Length: 152
Image (cartoon, rainbow, N blue to C red; front, side, top):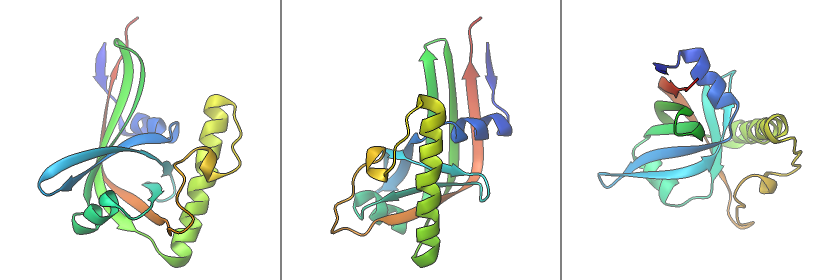
């Protein structure tokens, strides 16, 4: 059986995971990279962070993005969510608050999913060089769709 996921099922898939793929455009070509994220139910946004590099520079130029998350048990049993949205860079107290939300949120997802209890961001997300100041960002969701395939 194949079917579309409803909006609540899409949100549940986002809430239950913390690794997704971010797509952005650079020079007319799409790029896709894995990122660690947290879905914030209060703001209906994806929260993440990165050091300044290609991805951040290009999203500053063109904030339109796509983001996907999958759960794949087998070729006949999977769920997938695709969303479109806009990149927003946070600063100052907003960035500090959202980085805290990101860290605590991902820790909860990992604890619920894997029974592990990481204490620091470096235990579940790419380390950022101590000299780099991380860019905290949100993806404001403008459209969300999902698919499911399940065999019985």
